[in-house]
Image 1: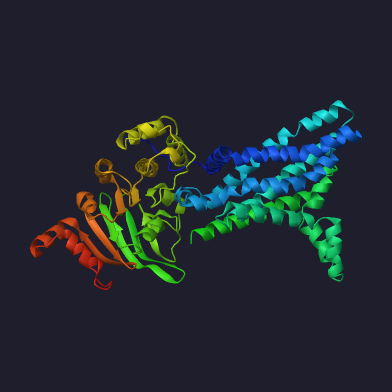
Image 2: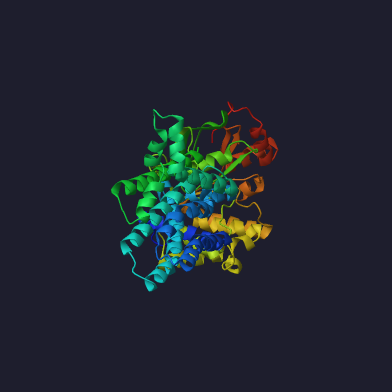
Length: 255
Length: 251
């Protein structure tokens, strides 16, 4: 046997791409991904279509305002298997034996889930066509809404991936991810943070948490077509934080 | 440049305060096939995982093909092929997809990858299952697919954790032939509970007991010793495995 010339390992970004491709195939191989896509589409579009036909509303804002809550429940179903499945099936050791850094693994898995979220967003575009056919459309609002939804998807999937790396049980990962995401979103709701403020009026903890921790106000401003730097920094910064926690969790698993 | 295939120095690791490997040191030279023996829980798998880079040991220094696993973990893994105790295959992928994925991550593509896969498929008789999903394969085929994945990049160092577990006698013989064929330019360390396997292919044997090395001997020396003492190599190994860690026999 003549040994072929070996490079030793794939380049850094090709490594990330290979991980993402393998994970995407594994996700699509399970029925969960398809079911999640269908549920997410029905849950997010149905209320909008209902309002459109009953009230004649030609506005995408309600669709984007409701989206964070729908995504919090649906994307947790995509992220729940990212690591817990590897722990359960003992394939985590296979990943760790490959010449791939923990960062490549974390990014590859996260990007694979994000790709499916992009597919979901693309499948919602008929909503836009429906709007455009019935009146003037504020494209800046729609662009802002989609940008916010993409960033929120990245945020939710990073949070879910981190939670998935802390448990071997996918159901536990789903419940914890969904609950944590809903709680963090709820902190940004006026009805919640004013109550929290009322508990400790001197500290104003509720309004501080709403502004600095919850992504809800950022999503709401995106839905209104306002793309603020602070909103981008909050979503991207927290996404990076959860990916870093995922990285730490992965390293801890090898000890 | 010549270098030692595997060099382990002062390896220590414990689980929840209970030491699994305690100050283990040994080397495996290129061209050697070394059998790694010991009772369950002796520390064999922990040692193999530490060398493969899937476990970060508490202390100690490990080099594979001259590369320090702690300083350059990715470079070390490019030189290592590791067959884990549990085959670690993704059930939903086809055998061919698994091998292509491992090859691609190792930097193999195109004709080079196809050439390597063809060689492994022929040697490990994988043709009947290449298109099947792993979950549809028998235990023996799963083991051989995992072995092919470990060897796809023609590594300098080969670590095998109970490689013949689940193989029938014919498959075991095929595995031994393959091992002997690839061994001349590699350092091979494999753990097993089957002493006949060690006698059939190994040049040297390491015996662990409670995380300590209690025997490090060449098979040829053990055979001579067994002949002189009118016992079997198995008797000598079993006696060593029952020996206290302080009474180490050097090669």
